Structures are given as structure tokens and as C-alpha cells.
Length: 170
Image 1 (cartoon, helix red, strand yellow):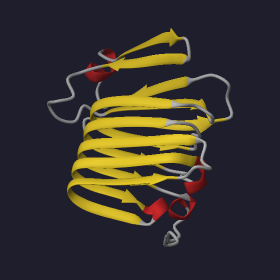
Image 2 (cartoon, helix red, strand yellow):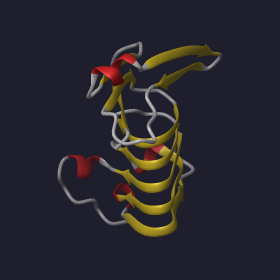
Image 3 (tube, helix red, strand yellow):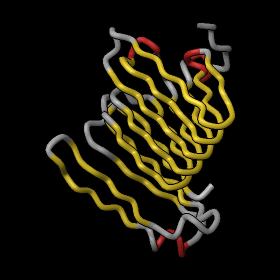
Image 4 (cartoon, helix red, strand yellow):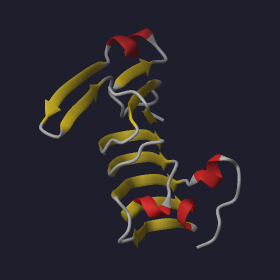
């Protein structure tokens, strides 16, 4: 896996970013750039060429529990835990895992892969193959969730999967 991005909701007010790398060369070539915007901010992470194998880069971002996320990544793994808010996540090749999914929280859910698998266990869905997607609308929900992987896997996990229990059927 070229890179890992782990986003965790916390009770902190600010954002905390930490990074680990498998080599000193990788560590010295990583740069973080934060640009404030009218409705939050944009964090860009630049590093070694992710196209040529595993560079062992792992980035952890701690955000307030109520945070809207928009993530674009060429390749790697994105994991989101304990974050309430809109989520718009796109990965070219790799995996997206979002935990703590509660069906009632989301007004719109749209998860799709070009080639791979959508495991929306929080909703009782598991689809694999080419051009697989899952959509659900709930007029009572507060947030929007959009996840897309061109080649790879999406996992939408509810509280039951996190605790090792089976998801209840739809």
C-alpha cells in the first residue's frame, strides 16, 4: 500500500497531524501545507512518489468529531473513525474504510467502485465486480456520504462490526 491516511474524530477543538515513515528518506521528503478557507481549511500532503511501491508513509489526522471531510488521494488507504459530518472521499487505487456508520445519520449515501468491492455492512450490502455501487436516501438524516474507489474496496462499518458482532439485515 503506497500510503495510509487515518482520520480520527476527537473531543479536541483543533486539528492534530502526525506522520510516520518507514525510512529517513521518506520522512525528510514529506511536507504538510495548510491553507485556511472561508468554511474550514485545506490540508495538502506532499511526499515521495507513491506510484513506485510502498513508501511506508502513515499519516494520522485528529479532527473535531463534528467535521466535514473532502479527501482526494491517488493511491493508498483512507480510514475514517468517529467523525460525524459530510464525507466526500475519492481514491484512485486502494481502500476506503469508514466506521461508526449509523444509517439514521446520513441523508444520502453513495458508494461506488470501478473494479472491486463495496462492503456496506452497516446497511447489509456486499457487492463485488465491475462498476459496483450502493446508494441510499433517508430524508431524516443530517449528512451526506460519498465514497468512490476506481480500483479497490470500500467498507462502510456500523457499530456492530467494530465490536465483532454481525450486522443486522436490512
